[in-house]
Image (cartoon, rainbow, N blue to C red; front, side):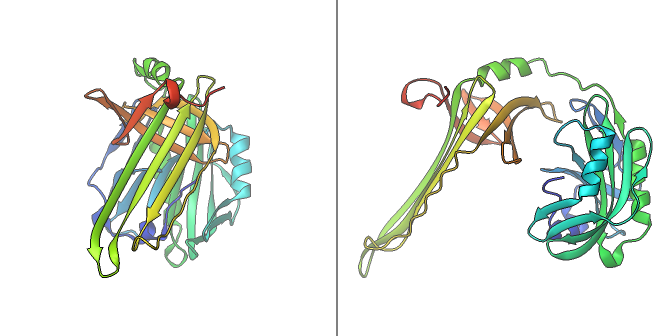
Amino acid sequence: MKKLLTLFLLLSGFASFGQVTGEIDYKYLGVSFTIPEGWMGQEAEMGYLMASNSVPGLILLLPHDQQYNLEQLKTQAQAGLNEGNGTYLQLSGPLADLGNGSIGGTFAGTLEQQPAKAYIIGMCNPYGKGLSIIAVTTSDQFNGNYETYAKAVKNSVKFRKPEAREDIGEWKEWMKNVKLTYMESYNSISPGVDGMTGGGYSLSKEIDLCGAGYFIYYGSSNISTGSDNSSAYSNSRDNGSGKWDIQTGPDGNPVLVLNFNTGETASYTLTYADKKLYLNGTRYFRTTDGEYAPNCK
């Protein structure tokens, strides 16, 4: 349940949401569900969000990180949710077996250090990764209806074998043993009282995708400001590594998924146009040889 939501999302107005209603079908994920009457939804980075003009709070559908069985879901529920930064939800009542590989319960705690309560349902998926359904609002507005909202969505969920994208295997082969590089820089120099003034920055990201299934990530930044006699400089480098994969996104597009050893996950929708590779719409250079070869053993 990482990246559950921020208080801004919890209290945001309905105007920020799309006008999607009815059944939602992700054939490449093998899951469909129906938005309850009176609610509207939109996709978000962490999953799917639903909001209402008349009901405070949100309903969220979040895909699980991996395929869990019922006992694993119960263990996770008992442990609660702790994401730091003042976001913590703990089971506050009995955990109910809802049948068909699903459990549910009421959770209480804080979101961004603000009191909150939620009814959360965890669902197993016999074909792959399951779902968490979260009906959440502030503590003073929570009531038994939020359990009803969550169960309405749960009863509409249908799992099936995901449809395979034909070229996903080709993408996996094409992305093996490559270095992906993103570079950005800006400089602004102008005359001033004490000489030349201005500032600038440079950013770079490198992702080495190794044929053995692991990746190495490098990131750096260099920022300078002020006159030619003063500057502020910062540099960071993360040698974090983990496993990578190419999966089919809900819209059918290939997605590069980086599962860091720290437990974090990053996803990038891949597109290729005019002989250029894009990750989430941003140009990356793909190289394989010489000094620009990936650092794979």
